[in-house]
Length: 250
Image 1: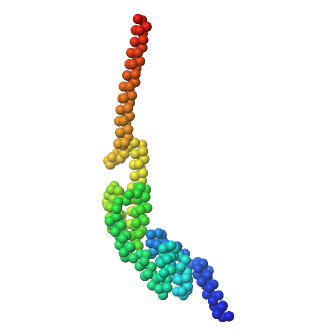
Image 2 (image 1 turned 90 degrees about the vertical axis):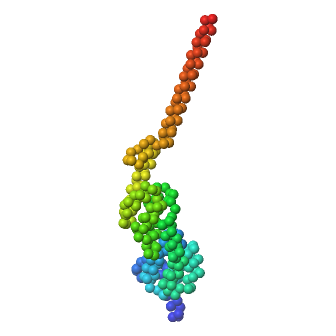
Image 3 (image 1 turned 120 degrees about the vertical axis):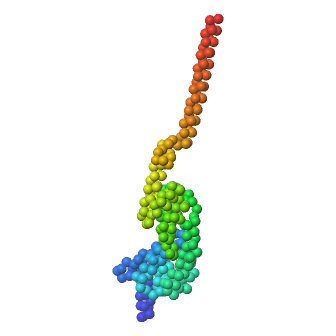
């Protein structure tokens, strides 16, 4: 009887753990994790998971059982293959980072930031791209200083924005974001001017856009041609009328 009661008690405790409730205290929620290419970042996931397990205060066997549900897709296959190898959270953490945030993966990220190709997206996407990449750079070991990040990421951006960032040398993310958003507003204004047939000439003034200049020249040319055709038609009609009058008199 005592053994049955003990088994029932352990099953109940495990059920409470899986429901993220310990007594009346709400336990830290843990997001689902797929791989290093999707949110949350591996380090963010580890932080949530560590806090969650600390609050549960259960044996490692129960913690392993409660951890299983947070791993999805690629990471679930990895978890099922390796979970018997870990005797505690520290061993799990080493194995997890080796698989999903290794030094090689960090070097690949550094390479993309410091020697990446030109940003080819729309100007409206520049802010999100820079902020997302900066957030990733802060997970490096050690985190990338913002001065290094700005010098590196600026090489990937449009030339006029690159010059703004290199001249301003922002010292924090807020300043960097404000500079980019200011540049985006300028781009939006320039685009509206282009739609009205004008373009920015780089000297705080606007000139007629080339494509509209070509259109004007083509229109003027067509008007000249049409005028000549109309004149010739009028001359032909007049000459025809004169010929008819002469013929009637004869």
